[in-house]
Length: 395
Image (tube, rainbow, N blue to C red; front, side):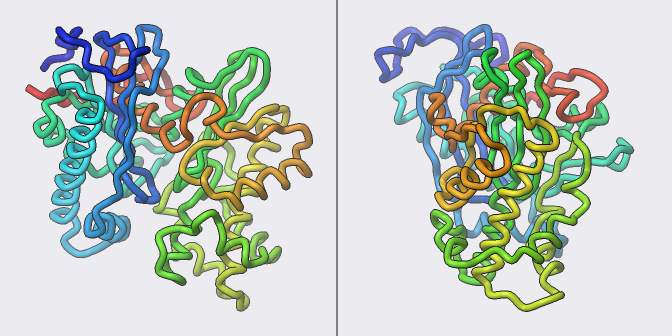
């Protein structure tokens, strides 16, 4: 199927009586830094870019593939061969997610215009010197197109980085489409493995940047100490007490004082980063977890104070929004430091917080097909607008 062959099917197969089927169905696929699973969304996107969620599923990562991706995020033996095999396995897992999504919704692959797929970030190294800057998202998009019979758009970060940008965050342009209001200054906090902020001024101005670790350090520490993938509802963190001296030492990391545009990832914030800050004293494991949670909160609030202190509403999305302790403490500290700031879930704006990024990649595929620039130079630092993504046709 070529880009021009998105067409209205003979028989509307959507289950929802309120959905009008036309040639604007897209699938978005996302597996984040935390490696907690694969989110697949089916979206209807009209000619102006308005996005409507039709169906969504989340599938857990295969344990062996998950462990391999964790291993590949550090230097390891025979990593080129292993990474290519992992990229193939991820394409197969993505294809299974697409098949299940379409089966649930009751439609065929030829009804879908394109898949927007992010892949699994293994390295992210933005630099001011373009020839020293690179990023790598593991995925075999050609195989994904072959397995699904659907055109695939992938490798969204590369074009922006070639233009001198950070290549991240990618989602602010979609946040603007979805959450902008001319009545108030808003910010969107995406709590994935890394936390990023999109700042939406009511006058139409948009900026954004990675503000620090989201779940990535919390997950790394509980995995090391308790053998769990994540801290359910922040219960373990709530059993400890943040250590002020340790938090101050962590906050002295140069990333937090760096001015935007800026982005980061597991290359910087990882288990070794935690251990490097624990050499000066002895702490209980739960106090370290509590301090890491406080680090996510404080780096977010510091960023808002420094760059958007007049924000009236903070919309939270991403897997970290399910961490009850984190959200409750974020609200408490925000009340002290940014009085009047209203904090709420993206669910209150019609989008499940777990699905915002999946929808964003469906939208990015839509934008690529229309040759619509989707980077934001004010966010990434690129020298101009660029069409993002690479096209892998199904036939």
